[in-house]
Amino acid sequence: MKSKSKGVFKKIYLYLLLAVLGGVVIFLFLPGNYYVREALMHLMPKIDQYTIFENRVVKAEDPQPWELAPNVETNQISPEFTPDFKKYGTVGFVVVQHNKIILEQYWHNYSPLSLSNSFSMAKSIISLLVGCAISDGKIKSVVEPVHDFLPEWTSFDGKTLTIKDLLTMSAGVEWDESYNSLFSKTTEAYYGNDLWKLVLTEKLIEKPGVRFNYQSGVSQMLAFIVQKATGKKIADYASEKLWTPIHAEQDAMWSLDRKSGMEKAYCCFNTNARDFARLGQLILNKGSWDSTQVVDSNYIREATKPATWLKFTRRLRPGETTYREPIPCNFYGYQFWLLNYQGLKVINFRGMLGQYILVIPQLDAVIVRLGTKSAEEFNVDQEYPKDIEVWLNAGIDAINRQK
Image (cartoon, rainbow, N blue to C red; front, side, top):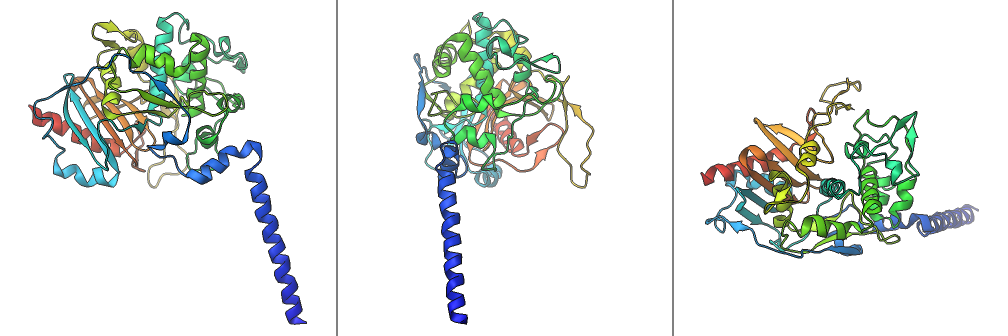
C-alpha cells in the first residue's frame, strides 16, 4: 500500500508541477507581459544593450574633431585611482579643459568610437530639447500647462500640472522607479513595447510642484510634449537642434519602443565618450557653440539652478529612524543634477550604471565617465552616489597636472 501511495503522490506532485509551469508559460506569453519575457531573458540593463532594440539615428551632419592637448596620448589617470576605476567597471574616461581633451583613456576594448548607453543622462538631453522648443516658439514657456499638449493630463486638487513640474520631477504622479523589480513601471518602460500606453497609466496622486520625486515616466512625458509641439521625432529634432550644431563626430542611436516607434527618452541615448563631452561643453558655453546660440542662455541658467522651493525626504543615515524632516531640494534643476564639491559647483548628467557628464564652470572643465557600476553609498544631503567623488578627484588631478 505504501508504494502505491507514494506512486500516487508522485503523480500528484508531477501534475501540480506541470500545472504551475504551464501557468507560468501562459502568464509569460500573455500580450501584456511581453516586457516580463524580455526582462527575464536579458536581466539587468547593460551599457551596450542598444542592439536588442530598434533604434533611430541621431545624425551628426557636420562632424568636427575635438582639439587635443599635446600630451593627451601619453596622459593617464594617476595610479592611486586605478583600484576604484576597476572596482566600478570603468570603460571610458575623458577630461576636457579650455575646449581641449587633456586626458582620454579606455578599458575593456572600448575606444573613442564605442557606443555606450546614457541611461538617465538622456533626461538632461530632453531638457535641452525643451529649451530648443521654447526658443522655436513651439512651447510658450516652462509654465505652460501639460494639457495643452497632452489633454489627458489636467489638474489635481485644483493645481494645474505644468511643464516646469515635469522638468523638476515634481509632477505628483504615481510611478514605481525601482530598477531591481521585475514588475516596476521603469522595467516595463525599458523592456516593453508601448511607452504611450504606459504613460497613460500614470495617475496624478498629489499636488504638483510641491515635492521632488524622481520618476522616469515624467521625463518620457516631456518627450511626448516635445514631439507633439514640434511635429518631429525626438531623434530628428535632437539631430537638428543639438547634435549637428555641436559638431558631434559620430551618429548617435536612440533606442525605441517596438509598437509606437517612440524614443525611450528617459534613457537609451547611445554615443561615445567624446560626444557626450560635447553636451557638457555646451553647458559650459551657456548654450552656445561657434558663436551660435544652440540653447537659450536664460534657459540654461534656469535649468541648472536648484529647485529649492520643492521639498525632499532624504535617505536615512546609519542609525537614524524612519522619520526624516523634509529638506529643500538643493540638488536638482530642470532634469540636471547639481552638487557642491570642495567649493566647486558641479552640474551633472547622470545615468544608473555610473554614466556621468560632470560640468565644472569654475575650472572650465568637463569630465565624462562611462562604466558598468556606481556606488551604493550616497551623500544623503546632496543625493549623489559616492563614486562621483572618484571621478571628480581623478579629473581634477589630471587638470592640476596640466598646469
